[in-house]
Length: 438
Image (cartoon, rainbow, N blue to C red; front, side, top):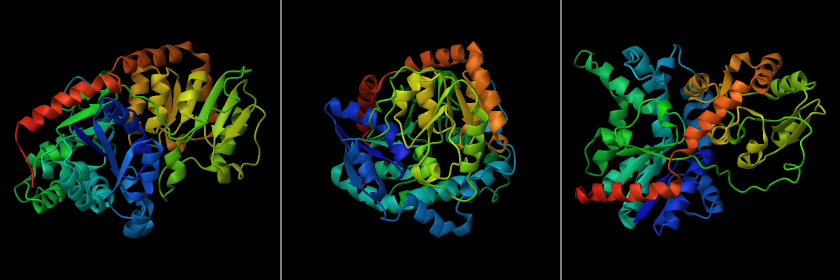
């Protein structure tokens, strides 16, 4: 069968797709990956066939052009507590009230949807009408892929590589909407999908928002709101072109700790986004300087030059492949990105998450429930606070035990190769329904 992966132009959204793309290709299927021009090198670097769709303008340029000084408005925390979106519970939960859920939709979901997708839709539909994929697998934010798949009658699903609140948010929205007076029930996300679907002679369905199915790497007990049809997948680390440094497998004189704040945070620094500054990194280094550890800090060259001091127990590098270094570590300090979180999880290493990622509350709750690590809020980032939490991770064996239990749950999920048969079966079922597009 022909399988088209679709991703927004964000390399850390493309990287997790690569192992599954190669599993499908190794099983004999035709595989292509569609994204905007700024990420074509990321795709071809992985040995995969790239399809260029959308604009030459980068996502950062587009956001700044459209939103100007308010470029990060759609990414800042809401003016209310939305933690119930991330509750992991077997019982009923109260959904967010209408005024809260509509704030999230109007401020975060809908603007992000059209900014990240509008430029891709026409090109994707045009290409799908030519290539005729059987299956379209979409990154969690790539709604353009669902529109294109529906337009040509292809099966389509969403790829979830982090605890994702979007399905729960949608269900909260629909429940709250039903309780509103007639004529006072705007659904801007539905309007976006309906406009694009109508352009290609299709009607809106909720499957456009949620996908016909979902592929999810989060261990089953910690998923926020499982899709009615969820396929579990083991997370397999992939970080792009990388080289194992010569020092990494030498004898470590002390427990090794990795501190990294991610590729994405270096790639796109917008005003208003929570991030760890160089000054804060310096304070953290100073606070950890007398600990008996081997601290490995990843920091881009321009930021590294702003450091005033590098303690003797610290090694500063621009980049190191996580799947190589994490297994050698006693703890990992990171910003909550999917690669750092999942990479630490599958290697059974305790982690300290600085809650800078959008889905950080879900990760915080998972770590609390499993005792696999600790989490601190961005406004708590101080050297002494990091030192306190790291010391707990290193000295309390319960954190290592919790991380190893969570690791076993993660590794029990099907590998990308094992998932291929399920994807083949589901695609055949959907295609047999005979629902074709234009």
